[in-house]
Amino acid sequence: MTTIPRKKKANIPHLIGYTCTICHRHYPYEEELLTCPDCGDTAILDIDYDYDVISQHVSRESLRKDYTNSMWRYKAFLPLEERDYSASLRVGWTPLYRSLRLGDELGLKALYVKDDGLNPTASLKDRASAVAVAKALELGYDTISCSSTGNAASSCAGNAARVGLKTVIFVPERAPQGKLAQMLVFGAQVVSVIGDYRETFNLSKAAIDKYGWYNRNAGINPVMAEGKKTVSFEIAEQLNFAPTDWVAVSVGDGCTIGGVYLGFRDLFALGMIDRIPKILGVQSTGCSPFVDAARDGVPLKPTPENTLADSISVGVPRNPVKALRAVSASNGAWIAVPDEDILDAMRVMGTVEGVFGEPAGVTSFAGVKRALEQGIIKPGESVTCLVTGSGLKDVVNALRAAGEPIRCHPDLEELDRTDLIARLNKA
Ligand SMILES: *Cc1c(COP(=O)(O)O)cnc(C)c1O
Ligand SMILES: [Zn+2]
Image 1 (spheres, helix red, strand yellow):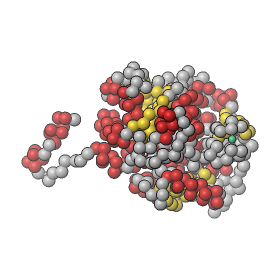
Image 2: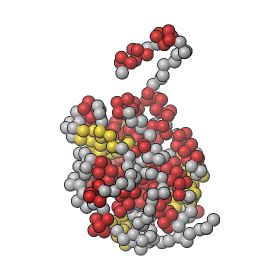
Image 3: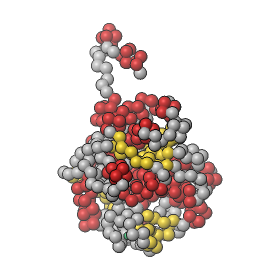
């Protein structure tokens, strides 16, 4: 096996540098940075772009003629070298469905569902992993590592497998079986940590520091939110550059919602959209550090992790600054919904729209319903609901949401005596 010598930085003309989200110091792009050298590990960086350079490569017109049906149609916006990415997994360009019935029922002007559960490893995390894996290769690493509540890990493992990188994954022992099976099938070394997500994250950080692997932790590495921002490019483009009034996103660490904002910010800076949608951050009442902090006007406090929506069961969010900014800079709102509403959203999304999301995947929709009840979203506004992961990842909760099948012997008379017809008439 040949090892490629590690590079300090890549050749990226549109990347100007980094700005620390804590001390706001600017660092020119002289080497690849993860966190602020002055403020330390919790100081996430923003990546600064030269929009003049980007606009030389991409426009509404150029996109119209681009048949790349993956997130790589937006590579001019990403902090990566110009290269052919067609050999990697096909991430992105997921469908944006106009809701056929739910939007009307709720009194919305329009409701759209962006089904990111249809990504190759079945979650939106693929957008971040695709960029992380590309960056690891670009810099000459042979191993990539992260800690995760599940989806980041399975996604990292899948995208890495495809390009021949080795993967070391740290997950809390409560990770659902579907996600665990994915990582193992993708050949990752999986460390199941006897502890909660916070402890899992800390162990992964210590191990990555010690062994020198490429760090895919979204709470540290700024390229992760950059990958996730491609979902906003798609929402905008699929709506002919007139995005909905609101975009609803379920929030754990805060990287996804932070990325959603970055995408709209980029398009706005380039004059490709004329308004940034209001961003609705949705959490479970069982674990809602962002919602609590916003309601009380105080800094985030560590919170117990008590929700069945495992992907957003994050008591100590690692991307607080970008998440808070996404909501405040877009004039959006924070809202929490109980787990019962999340299970209900799973059933309704499946029954009424044919979209099967995992609990965290449909928490956004549960939040839209509640935000309408509370007058945060107004009737007559338009909304895009981001479904961030597939329900097949967590069938235990899917079955809780959906109820029991009818049990019957292969006997028509017995079938007649069941409540099949009553159920059909009710549905
Ligand atoms: C990771 C994840 C989220 C939340 O993303 P954060 O960056 O942790 O806020 C939401 N839904 C699903 C399905 C996820 O996997
Ligand atoms: Zn700093």
